[in-house]
Amino acid sequence: MTPETRPFDSKMPARILVIKLRHHGDMLLITPVIQTLRQRYPDAKIDVLLYEETRDMLAANTDIHHIYGIDRKWKKQGQRHLIAMEWGLLRTLRKQHYDLVLNLADQWRSAIVTRFTGAPQRIGFDFPKRRHPIWRFCHTVLASTQAHNSLHTVQQNLSILAPLGIEVQNAPAKMGYSEADWQTCKALLPEGLTGGYIVVQPTSRWFFKCWREDRMSAVINALSADGYTVVLTSGPDAKEKQMVDTIIAGCPNARLVSLAGKLTLRQLGALIDHARLFIGVDSVPMHMAAALNTPLVALFGPSKLTFWRPWQAQGEVIWAGDYGPLPDPDAIDTRTDERYLDLIPEEEVIAAARRVLA
Image 1 (tube, rainbow, N blue to C red):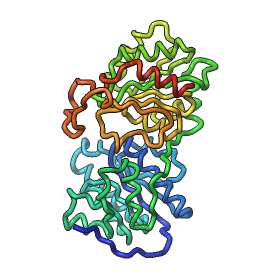
Image 2: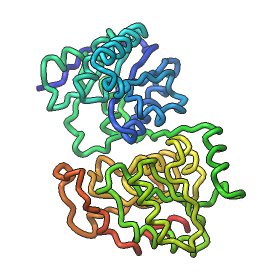
Image 3: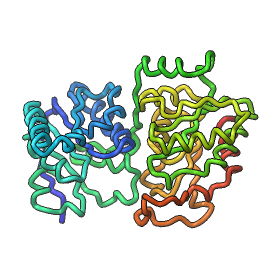
Image 4: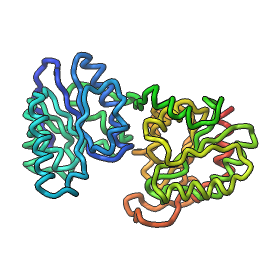
């Protein structure tokens, strides 16, 4: 089925809505689309619709006029509350009188919202799994996904601009934070430590993406012996903090500070932005480090490298698949206790860190 190619109104859109309903890292990787829209339509007001829990990723982005959120906690308060809140959101969006809606999501819910805005120009993707009359009805144009299997997620997102005559492949991602976020970080760091440190984020929300604790301890010990202070971070989840505690136990004499579970995402962004180096696994902080242009060493696998490698990163990506066989990412049981990154030797990570620091 061929995507629709109805002609566009040539006038510059004054109000634009970008829709993406996914995880934190996915939200950071739509910022190249937002930045490109800002450059092409400098006077437009660009809004974003996202899942409420991911708001922090875009809250400090100065290219965005307003953020609307769908709170997935609404349904916990009953069906009546959920319907009332979603209906109120739909009415609010319709009142904005958008000229252009870009639906980057693949959920039916996002298509219905797109249609309900009443915008005269509504672009979605021609996803094979959504080749249905209702999906086409919700959009005025569908952008091709034919090349998506060979493109990074950022490039996939940017391809939604093709029907607008905007052909971009390499726009940068953007992670924002405030001065208050940095001041909070400084208050938690030892006095005088305001730069030159190494941030190590060993955890991911998916533990099959994590590396063995003893190997991360060995990396920290080596870099501490080289004279660097390491700041260890993680999310607030108890399992993540337990992993950090195990790593710390293996570094009794290291120059080490733990801020595990103590920072918001924007505060973590500020911490990473002032670091000499970031070391981490395939996770949101890895994408943040790339967006902030902080040199990094990323331990990667078994996710799809083409889609999810850190975008335009400075530093080195160490792919576990170079050291042994990895399963098909689509076949992995995300509840597994197996650590696929364990294929990567600690010596490789230490050597990569020293090269990037040199």
